[in-house]
Image (cartoon, rainbow, N blue to C red; front, top):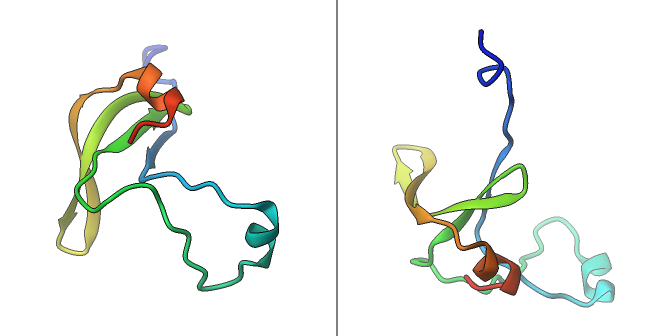
Length: 83
């Protein structure tokens, strides 16, 4: 096995963002709904080790959720909070 093949990369997908007062966050319990700044057709952010690497679209395949990569990420947009 080469050194590159031995490296693990954590992949995360960011659906959207929300800003809440701490008091509201602390009152949340099971079943609470957090509104996001995204709509159903917005692209998601794909992160590798918490760094934006690509944008993508959500797909439902049978009973599984998948992400299709659509384009490279713009790090400056991610840092600015663009969705």
